[in-house]
Image 1 (cartoon, rainbow, N blue to C red):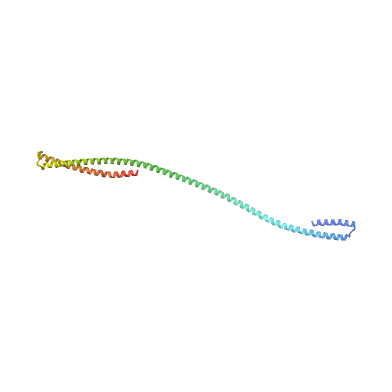
Image 2 (image 1 turned 90 degrees about the horizontal axis):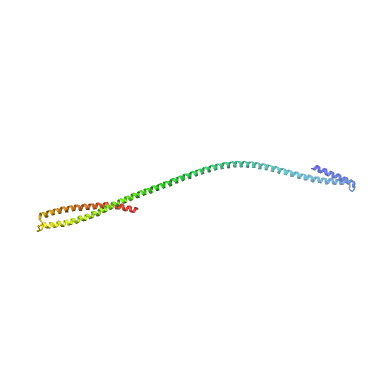
Length: 250
């Protein structure tokens, strides 16, 4: 570039010299000297510019090298990032597969647990229903037995009450007969001890003996009635207690 510039200056100088030779107004030497000084200054300016260009080129070269290094580093980092991304992608894929397997296992266990729980609830409900049904059946059976027992106890009570009533009436009749027999016996004894023996003493004695025997018989009947009446009352007491409990239970 410098050579081209010098050739251009020399060409201009030759033209100028030719022009000055033709004009003859100024000395050629002085003019050439002036032109050489100008050329020297221009050369110095060109050299200075060239130095600046070279300096700039060196700076740009250094910057370019720096940028190249940075680019290489970035490419290397990018390659590392891509490699890490691939590894991360692979690990993520494996993790997703493991997570899917774990999820399927958990879902399977959950479904199994729910199934077992439903079966357990079904069995519990069935057991409760069976227990309730058996309880109701036993309750019905017990109620039937209780009603049967109640009816039997009421029948026994009615029988014993009737028996008690009859024994009471029989006892009253025996007491009445005993009183009549005693009054008659007193009359007979009065006749025997009295002066009036028109009926015959032997007959009165036989009458007295008969009345005494009848009195003893009535006394035995009375004792038997009282004993049976007491036994009947004793038999009625537990029946009434049981019936009272049954009525309270109902």
